Image (cartoon, rainbow, N blue to C red; front, side, top):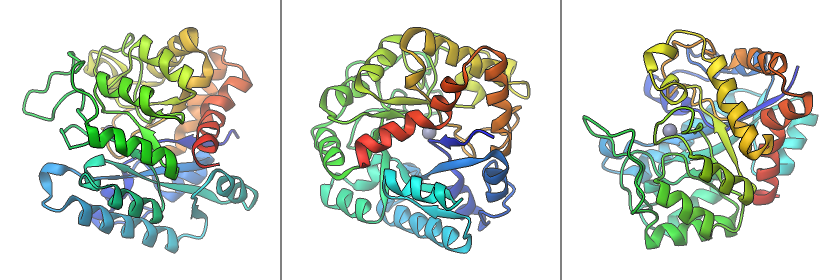
Length: 324
Ligand SMILES: [Zn+2]
């Protein structure tokens, strides 16, 4: 069975909120699902909702503690801090866990805090969620009626955001541009000296949503050597969300992957499920079902090499370039 890497899930915040545990939680990602799906590496995002906290840094630290406590309880999964750690875990038959953050605002405009997060093991940071946060502008702001169709093309990274990207490159923290504005994306392409990642974003020309990347962005990402993780959320797969919801989302994922492959090649594609941050009423409802996606890719003409690039090799390349 083909091993896979998932660039994004919100499982730890869901576990912490419910005081559940990774081993057997009734969530899209739990240890049993990861084993059944043959997961090689799961990225675990510390998701902080800026409007629901007075102290983003403290909340993030508490979530990081929850993450490590869960890993300590389970000997089949172990944290990784470098590319080599993933290979070592694989040799030992262990699943790897990568600590990531979804909300650059938890650094509170401080490179000192950024460096402390690095020392705590953080290796990828999604610069924004859906709020303006001191780092950069998102592509839509979380309001009652957000505009999902008009990208933000004027406002990108702040002065601090540019410094943060440069310090992340120096330290070895992968820059994640999902949620960032179009202008912010191009700023990251310009300022990052390392391959960047859109951990959970699809193709905008297939599904016109500002959380997805345009063809031009996908080509820039290819030049940069980065990857984009295919998001399983129905709203980012099909414009008429109702059409995809509760139905088979696999054909839509294939459609996005075929398009991206046709313009930029398979080397820019990865998996970024967004599990436990999305409605589970989809055919790929949890991590145990990933092999179903790879089987369907096979039937749809993806070669074995392309499937292994998309399932794990492409992200390993980005990891090695950032944190070799
Ligand atoms: Zn997200």
